[in-house]
Length: 399
Image 1 (cartoon, rainbow, N blue to C red):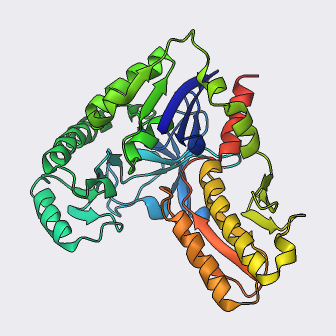
Image 2 (image 1 turned 30 degrees about the horizontal axis):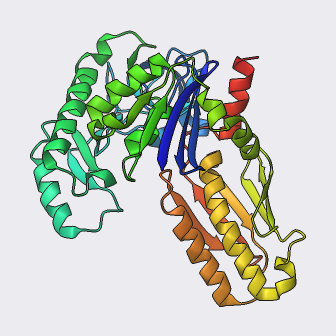
């Protein structure tokens, strides 16, 4: 049975998805006052910093955000300059791309975008893009022509994977919603003072339902009235097919966090050691520059079986590593030290298996290569903070 749960824990909202009893996705969202990916603001350029290729901009938060030079596309500015560049003091509409990290400010971009279930509307040049995961050329040609006829401004539409074979009328309905929001932001945004939030990005705990490409969950359980109201509103607008699965439990009932043993699950997801069924284990060490994952045979029978045992152990580890990367929200550079294998065919099979296990990750994982020393290089798109950092901030806010 596929289940999604939502519950409040202090100042945070926890969302988790399960396939039967196995945890497949989890997020911890901070208070609404935090900057979060998707938020759109009127900002003011505080300081241009050519040395680090960017600018610090005021978005209303205590700390200024950072705008990289290569993220300045087609900015919406109050006053343009002859050189076409941003200058100190300029007022510009920006969108949060990444939330604030432990030692890094939140980053923003000027080409704002609005994301739905089927479409992404992106400010800038007019055009159509299609998800690289859609391979049906006939469908792409037909749908691109249809979507192109909808565009009436300087923006691009990207057809998401969920758009494939969806009812065009449903996709068009979503487009109308996104276009209305975009038009309002563009037409009135620069009339507001710097620091004004023009649009609030979707809470992290709702992004999982928005981006879900799987079958409709059997149950969506929620125990908090405010979260339930927000869920109803979102589902009625973007995912009406999910609405009938929503079950609102009495706040006085047995807590969802206890029913699904979330305290123990979070403890396991912050432990550096992860045991495998074979008796082998992983050591996961996040560092400032990268995350290092080591595969060990342990005291099980794997190490006694020779090369064949090493392949079996590495295959089991690859599957668990893909799961841990997603659940812990590890990102950036990830280096994996699998058990060394002499057979080239075994190493090739391992690399293909790792690619297969990570291909469904919505954040985008790239298995780069295996180095001459046998280390496997992986990168994962960085959007949100790692789960461990979210839990740390949650603990600080509730201490």
